Amino acid sequence: QVQLVESGGGVVQPGGSLRLSCAASGSTFGTYGMSWARRPPGKELEWIASITKDGTSPSYANAVKGRFIISRDNAKNMLYLQMNMLKPEDTAHYYCNFNGVPSSRGQGTQVTVSS
Image (cartoon, rainbow, N blue to C red):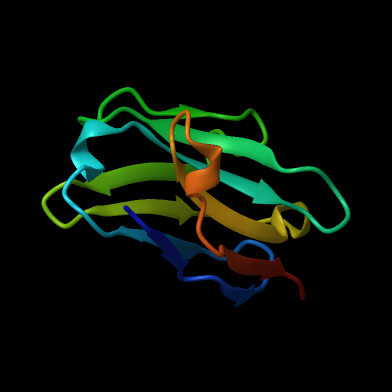
C-alpha cells in the first residue's frame, strides 16, 4: 500500500515562502496525477493545485495562482509545493493525495502565516 507523508510546514511571516514536500512509498507514484489540498481553521478542505503524472500541465485554484508552484520528481517519488508571497489566509493544514483517491492523504503538515 502506497503511503504519502507531507512535510515542510511551519510558521512564516506574511510575504514569506515555504516549500512543502510529499514523499510517496511504493513504485506506483509515477502512474498517478497528484494534488495538494488544504483545510483552513474551521473550514472545509479545499483543492489548491494538481499536476499530471508526467509533471506537465499544472493547474491551480484562483486563490493561489501566481504564488504557488506544484512540481514533482518521479525518480525520487516526491511531490512539492513551493509557496511564495504567503498571506494570513493561506494558514491551513496542507495535504497531498493521488488524484481520484482522497483516502490517500497523509497526516498533512501545518502552515501558519502570521506576523
